[in-house]
Image 1 (spheres, protein in one colour):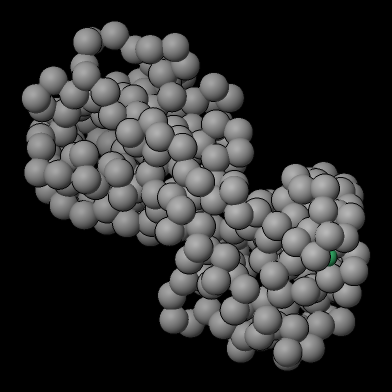
Image 2 (tube, rainbow, N blue to C red):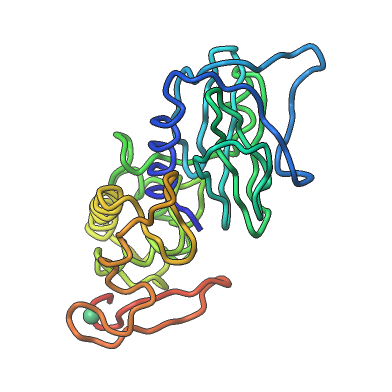
Length: 267
Ligand SMILES: [Zn+2]
Protein backbone atom coordinates (compact mmCIF):
# COMPACT_ATOMS: atom_id res chain seq x y z
CA UNK A 1 0.00 0.00 0.00
CA UNK A 2 1.49 3.35 -1.00
CA UNK A 3 2.60 5.41 1.99
CA UNK A 4 3.90 8.97 2.20
CA UNK A 5 7.10 8.49 0.13
CA UNK A 6 5.27 6.58 -2.63
CA UNK A 7 2.41 9.09 -2.81
CA UNK A 8 4.89 11.99 -2.89
CA UNK A 9 6.85 10.23 -5.67
CA UNK A 10 3.72 9.67 -7.74
CA UNK A 11 2.63 13.28 -7.17
CA UNK A 12 5.98 14.57 -8.38
CA UNK A 13 5.55 12.57 -11.57
CA UNK A 14 1.97 13.77 -12.07
CA UNK A 15 2.97 17.42 -11.67
CA UNK A 16 5.86 16.97 -14.10
CA UNK A 17 3.75 15.18 -16.73
CA UNK A 18 0.74 17.50 -16.54
CA UNK A 19 2.93 20.61 -16.60
CA UNK A 20 0.96 23.35 -18.35
CA UNK A 21 -1.02 20.96 -20.55
CA UNK A 22 -4.80 21.21 -20.74
CA UNK A 23 -6.72 18.64 -18.76
CA UNK A 24 -9.76 17.95 -20.90
CA UNK A 25 -11.75 15.48 -18.85
CA UNK A 26 -12.06 12.77 -16.24
CA UNK A 27 -13.52 9.42 -17.24
CA UNK A 28 -14.72 6.67 -14.94
CA UNK A 29 -14.79 3.03 -16.00
CA UNK A 30 -15.62 1.41 -12.67
CA UNK A 31 -18.60 2.41 -10.50
CA UNK A 32 -17.46 4.27 -7.40
CA UNK A 33 -13.88 5.01 -8.42
CA UNK A 34 -14.75 8.60 -9.33
CA UNK A 35 -16.76 10.46 -6.71
CA UNK A 36 -18.41 13.46 -8.34
CA UNK A 37 -19.29 16.26 -5.93
CA UNK A 38 -20.18 18.80 -8.57
CA UNK A 39 -23.40 20.67 -9.22
CA UNK A 40 -25.01 20.26 -12.67
CA UNK A 41 -23.85 23.70 -13.84
CA UNK A 42 -20.21 23.16 -12.83
CA UNK A 43 -17.62 22.98 -15.62
CA UNK A 44 -14.28 21.82 -14.23
CA UNK A 45 -12.74 21.09 -17.65
CA UNK A 46 -10.83 22.14 -19.63
CA UNK A 47 -8.36 23.43 -17.09
CA UNK A 48 -4.68 23.35 -16.26
CA UNK A 49 -3.01 22.25 -13.07
CA UNK A 50 -2.67 25.24 -10.73
CA UNK A 51 -0.85 23.35 -8.01
CA UNK A 52 -0.51 19.84 -6.68
CA UNK A 53 0.27 18.88 -3.11
CA UNK A 54 0.08 15.93 -0.75
CA UNK A 55 -1.67 15.63 2.59
CA UNK A 56 -1.06 12.28 4.30
CA UNK A 57 -1.63 9.64 1.63
CA UNK A 58 -3.88 11.96 -0.42
CA UNK A 59 -2.86 13.84 -3.55
CA UNK A 60 -4.69 17.09 -4.18
CA UNK A 61 -4.62 18.56 -7.69
CA UNK A 62 -5.99 22.11 -7.82
CA UNK A 63 -7.16 23.20 -11.26
CA UNK A 64 -7.18 26.67 -12.81
CA UNK A 65 -10.98 26.34 -13.16
CA UNK A 66 -11.36 26.49 -9.37
CA UNK A 67 -12.12 22.78 -9.04
CA UNK A 68 -9.89 20.08 -7.59
CA UNK A 69 -9.18 16.36 -7.67
CA UNK A 70 -8.42 14.41 -4.52
CA UNK A 71 -6.68 11.15 -5.42
CA UNK A 72 -6.29 8.30 -2.93
CA UNK A 73 -4.38 5.28 -4.24
CA UNK A 74 -5.36 3.05 -1.29
CA UNK A 75 -4.15 -0.56 -1.70
CA UNK A 76 -3.15 -1.03 -5.33
CA UNK A 77 -3.94 2.22 -7.17
CA UNK A 78 -1.37 3.66 -9.51
CA UNK A 79 -1.28 6.46 -12.04
CA UNK A 80 0.41 5.72 -15.33
CA UNK A 81 1.16 8.31 -18.01
CA UNK A 82 0.41 6.89 -21.43
CA UNK A 83 -0.65 7.65 -25.00
CA UNK A 84 -4.41 8.04 -25.30
CA UNK A 85 -5.72 5.42 -27.70
CA UNK A 86 -9.27 6.10 -26.50
CA UNK A 87 -9.51 2.76 -24.74
CA UNK A 88 -9.13 1.84 -21.08
CA UNK A 89 -6.51 -0.83 -20.36
CA UNK A 90 -6.90 -3.82 -18.04
CA UNK A 91 -7.82 -2.69 -14.49
CA UNK A 92 -8.02 0.95 -15.61
CA UNK A 93 -10.77 2.34 -13.37
CA UNK A 94 -10.58 6.00 -14.40
CA UNK A 95 -8.51 8.29 -16.59
CA UNK A 96 -7.51 11.93 -16.57
CA UNK A 97 -7.57 13.01 -20.21
CA UNK A 98 -4.88 15.45 -21.30
CA UNK A 99 -4.50 17.50 -24.50
CA UNK A 100 -1.85 16.35 -26.94
CA UNK A 101 -3.07 12.77 -27.03
CA UNK A 102 -2.13 11.58 -23.55
CA UNK A 103 -3.97 10.24 -20.56
CA UNK A 104 -3.13 9.52 -16.97
CA UNK A 105 -4.48 6.02 -16.41
CA UNK A 106 -5.73 5.19 -12.92
CA UNK A 107 -4.96 1.46 -12.73
CA UNK A 108 -6.29 -0.25 -9.63
CA UNK A 109 -6.59 -4.03 -9.36
CA UNK A 110 -8.30 -4.08 -5.97
CA UNK A 111 -10.64 -1.13 -6.80
CA UNK A 112 -10.36 0.59 -3.41
CA UNK A 113 -8.75 3.72 -4.87
CA UNK A 114 -10.80 6.88 -5.30
CA UNK A 115 -10.70 10.11 -7.30
CA UNK A 116 -12.97 12.82 -5.92
CA UNK A 117 -13.86 15.74 -8.19
CA UNK A 118 -15.10 18.75 -6.26
CA UNK A 119 -15.00 22.54 -5.92
CA UNK A 120 -11.57 23.65 -4.66
CA UNK A 121 -13.17 25.34 -1.65
CA UNK A 122 -14.44 21.97 -0.39
CA UNK A 123 -11.11 20.10 -0.33
CA UNK A 124 -10.46 20.69 3.34
CA UNK A 125 -13.83 19.38 4.52
CA UNK A 126 -13.66 16.40 2.15
CA UNK A 127 -10.43 15.11 3.70
CA UNK A 128 -10.59 13.07 6.90
CA UNK A 129 -9.08 14.32 10.14
CA UNK A 130 -5.33 14.07 9.52
CA UNK A 131 -2.56 14.54 12.06
CA UNK A 132 0.84 16.19 11.68
CA UNK A 133 2.85 15.93 8.49
CA UNK A 134 5.97 14.11 9.69
CA UNK A 135 8.37 16.02 7.43
CA UNK A 136 7.08 19.44 8.42
CA UNK A 137 7.69 21.71 11.35
CA UNK A 138 5.32 20.93 14.15
CA UNK A 139 6.14 17.24 14.11
CA UNK A 140 8.73 16.17 16.65
CA UNK A 141 9.25 14.68 20.09
CA UNK A 142 7.06 17.31 21.77
CA UNK A 143 4.17 16.63 19.38
CA UNK A 144 4.35 12.85 19.81
CA UNK A 145 4.64 13.14 23.57
CA UNK A 146 1.68 15.55 23.76
CA UNK A 147 -0.50 13.26 21.65
CA UNK A 148 0.62 9.86 22.94
CA UNK A 149 2.22 10.00 26.41
CA UNK A 150 -1.05 9.03 28.13
CA UNK A 151 -2.25 6.58 25.48
CA UNK A 152 -2.60 2.92 26.38
CA UNK A 153 -2.31 1.83 22.75
CA UNK A 154 0.81 0.06 21.44
CA UNK A 155 3.13 2.58 19.79
CA UNK A 156 2.87 0.86 16.40
CA UNK A 157 -0.93 1.10 16.36
CA UNK A 158 -0.72 4.77 17.35
CA UNK A 159 1.75 5.61 14.57
CA UNK A 160 -0.53 3.96 11.99
CA UNK A 161 -3.40 6.22 13.12
CA UNK A 162 -3.65 8.85 10.35
CA UNK A 163 -5.16 11.36 12.77
CA UNK A 164 -1.92 11.26 14.80
CA UNK A 165 0.72 11.15 12.04
CA UNK A 166 -0.42 11.52 8.42
CA UNK A 167 1.07 9.30 5.74
CA UNK A 168 2.64 6.38 7.62
CA UNK A 169 1.74 2.76 6.88
CA UNK A 170 2.89 -0.69 7.87
CA UNK A 171 6.26 -0.78 6.10
CA UNK A 172 7.58 2.55 7.33
CA UNK A 173 6.28 2.18 10.89
CA UNK A 174 8.13 -1.17 11.18
CA UNK A 175 11.31 0.45 9.85
CA UNK A 176 10.95 3.59 12.00
CA UNK A 177 10.54 1.60 15.22
CA UNK A 178 13.56 -0.54 14.35
CA UNK A 179 15.61 2.59 13.67
CA UNK A 180 14.43 4.08 16.98
CA UNK A 181 15.15 0.84 18.87
CA UNK A 182 11.60 0.75 20.26
CA UNK A 183 9.51 -2.41 20.50
CA UNK A 184 6.28 -2.00 18.45
CA UNK A 185 4.21 -3.67 21.18
CA UNK A 186 5.26 -1.23 23.87
CA UNK A 187 2.38 0.88 25.13
CA UNK A 188 2.69 4.61 24.48
CA UNK A 189 2.36 5.42 28.17
CA UNK A 190 5.44 3.25 28.88
CA UNK A 191 7.61 5.43 26.63
CA UNK A 192 9.71 8.30 27.92
CA UNK A 193 10.75 11.59 26.32
CA UNK A 194 13.90 10.04 24.94
CA UNK A 195 11.86 7.32 23.20
CA UNK A 196 9.60 9.91 21.60
CA UNK A 197 12.65 11.89 20.48
CA UNK A 198 14.15 8.76 18.89
CA UNK A 199 10.87 7.89 17.16
CA UNK A 200 10.47 11.43 15.78
CA UNK A 201 14.06 11.51 14.50
CA UNK A 202 13.77 8.03 12.98
CA UNK A 203 10.50 9.00 11.26
CA UNK A 204 12.12 11.99 9.56
CA UNK A 205 15.23 10.00 8.63
CA UNK A 206 13.47 6.94 7.17
CA UNK A 207 10.96 9.01 5.19
CA UNK A 208 13.69 11.27 3.80
CA UNK A 209 15.73 8.25 2.72
CA UNK A 210 12.70 6.58 1.15
CA UNK A 211 11.86 9.77 -0.77
CA UNK A 212 15.42 9.91 -2.06
CA UNK A 213 14.95 6.38 -3.45
CA UNK A 214 11.50 7.12 -4.95
CA UNK A 215 9.68 4.98 -2.43
CA UNK A 216 9.43 1.23 -1.84
CA UNK A 217 8.22 -1.19 -4.52
CA UNK A 218 7.31 -4.33 -2.59
CA UNK A 219 4.15 -5.42 -4.36
CA UNK A 220 3.02 -3.26 -7.23
CA UNK A 221 3.94 0.34 -6.46
CA UNK A 222 5.12 2.10 -9.60
CA UNK A 223 6.00 5.66 -10.46
CA UNK A 224 4.03 7.56 -13.10
CA UNK A 225 6.61 6.45 -15.69
CA UNK A 226 5.93 2.85 -14.54
CA UNK A 227 9.43 2.50 -13.04
CA UNK A 228 9.84 1.00 -9.58
CA UNK A 229 11.12 2.74 -6.45
CA UNK A 230 14.22 1.28 -4.81
CA UNK A 231 13.90 1.74 -1.03
CA UNK A 232 13.00 -1.98 -0.72
CA UNK A 233 16.76 -2.56 -1.06
CA UNK A 234 17.36 -0.61 2.16
CA UNK A 235 14.71 -2.11 4.44
CA UNK A 236 16.15 -3.44 7.69
CA UNK A 237 13.34 -5.51 9.23
CA UNK A 238 10.25 -5.42 7.01
CA UNK A 239 9.96 -8.86 5.34
CA UNK A 240 13.53 -9.60 6.45
CA UNK A 241 14.83 -12.71 8.18
CA UNK A 242 17.70 -10.97 9.96
CA UNK A 243 18.29 -7.41 11.13
CA UNK A 244 21.52 -5.64 10.07
CA UNK A 245 23.09 -6.82 13.37
CA UNK A 246 22.46 -10.44 12.37
CA UNK A 247 19.66 -11.12 14.87
CA UNK A 248 16.64 -13.10 13.83
CA UNK A 249 13.66 -10.91 12.90
CA UNK A 250 10.28 -11.85 14.35
CA UNK A 251 7.07 -11.60 12.34
CA UNK A 252 4.05 -11.18 14.59
CA UNK A 253 0.42 -10.30 14.02
CA UNK A 254 -0.57 -6.98 15.54
CA UNK A 255 -4.03 -5.47 15.04
CA UNK A 256 -4.46 -7.59 11.92
CA UNK A 257 -1.20 -6.50 10.30
CA UNK A 258 2.22 -8.13 10.17
CA UNK A 259 4.73 -6.52 12.49
CA UNK A 260 8.44 -7.17 11.89
CA UNK A 261 10.78 -6.54 14.78
CA UNK A 262 14.14 -7.48 16.18
CA UNK A 263 13.66 -8.56 19.81
CA UNK A 264 17.32 -7.77 20.56
CA UNK A 265 17.62 -4.31 18.99
CA UNK A 266 14.10 -3.20 19.95
CA UNK A 267 13.66 -3.34 23.69
ZN1 LIG B 1 18.79 -6.79 15.86
